[in-house]
Amino acid sequence: MTFNEFLNSDIENSDEIIDYYLNFLTEFSSKDFPYEQGIQLRGSAEKFSNTIDRIIFLDKEKTAKYMENIERFSESLNYYRRRKDYSPLLKFFLPLYKTSFTRVQNDFEKIYSATINLVNDYNRTSNFRSQNINMNGFYDTTVTNKEKVKELISEAIDLINSESSITQESKKQLTEYLNKVIKDLERKGVDWTKVIGRIKEIVIILGALSTVIGNTSSLFKAKEKLEQTSEVIEKTSINLNHNTLNQTFIFQEIKQLNNLNSILIEEGKKN
Image 1 (cartoon, rainbow, N blue to C red):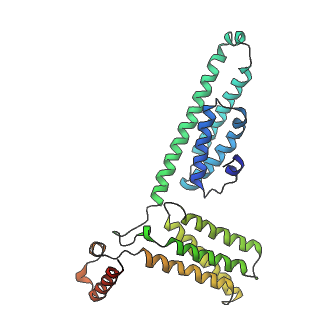
Image 2 (image 1 turned 90 degrees about the vertical axis):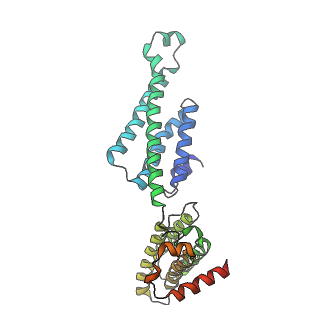
């Protein structure tokens, strides 16, 4: 990823942005703070803090403090650079020069330490958000048919793009939002709460649009495709076996035990 690609990255790609920024800081330090990267530091720090803020909602004081550390470091670095080209003799007689690089290193360490703390906060929050409910293993999203869900979303996108009664800008907003859902589904740890919520948002919007232009439109068909994703998630995420059923139900209170037995027999045949 280039620096421009980093700056223009969608904040949704938070993991990639954070990885790039950490690598940027590590390389910046290992090369004794080269000028070009020094110019890029503030923009990189703002991109990083905005990305973290999107996930953990930083308070203004914490953001301000982080950027103050960046400014303080930049001032120390500029002071050091102005004296870097002095003659060895002059450097010897300037006590402040001897401590200026130490100050640069100390100020950078504060930035790096604060960055690691923010990344740790981000990881804790991300892990919490990705902990999908599983109901004793009864609802298991690790086996959900993600490919079918993505296929239905892609078909909905095609239908939206084919609709002639809405503007290109409207199509762009709808399809970009759905493409974000597809990207979410391609992540290692899918946040199903976010995925399902986003799909339902678009279903609501498409439903409202369809009431204006009619239920025979491509938008109504796109809405139906997205509604089918819920059926796919439901059917492919339910894990039926004796263990999960015993932990989930009180069988004495269930009148339709014959239905459960039939379901288990069918599941046994599949396996």
